[in-house]
Image (cartoon, rainbow, N blue to C red; front, side, top):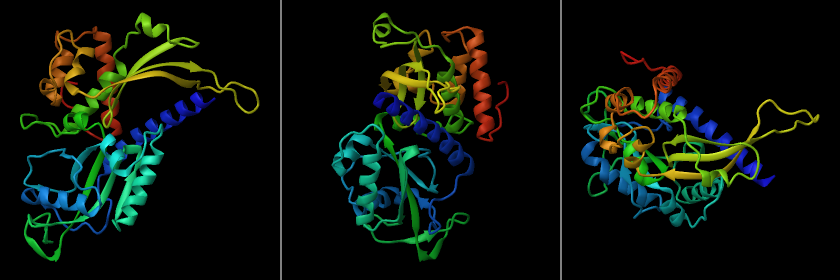
Length: 320
């Protein structure tokens, strides 16, 4: 029963994550009404490091993700490794991460930070002062004129928690050569891995305790590419009748955290992440002769991609 409960909790969390991602990407906006400034590029590092110091997380390795080429930033997007955050908060690994988020909430409350935690997205936000290289508060910068105002600047720092190695690549903005934002690349990648078949090895087949073993890929933009081995089990309702949807029992998961290793799942000759890190490059590989699968798989990928864009209220690129 414990295995069933853990599987259900994990699947519910994944569905919540998908819904929250759609909301965040579609609506945007600040987590705090007090935000009154954009962040000049030259003040990024000092403001981030001062924020980590204020929050008692100083010394933690982080990376700035998203589009790094801008001169001014709205919210500051950073990524940290979950294992390092756990060490800083002295929290052991737990199945649903509830312990981590509770510890983080208690920690930030003690530090008198204004914050918001979103467990379903594995991220948290902090309201932070805009500071110069000597960590002195500086005036807010107007988002339209980029001129200084007569009040101290308050910005929003977003901290993504997961595999730092994975997020540095997949949470990055599109390269300058691309005409499309990274959300297009990531939506296409999610559609791709939701469709392509995953082969079960003979060794994996032996690991099924019962039922018909199945396998699928899932793209988690915090953890990595998940290779999930599972089977389905009928669940009985309160009146003794079987429910329409069976429970998914996870047997084993393998997580690939290196983005350079994922193309081998769908290409005959694998390429590095830098060869598929834009929407155009990834699409070129899918429609080209290097694609592993037949046209029916490609068509299903395109259909799933269009459905994802519709959910995000984004226009479908020409030719799709």
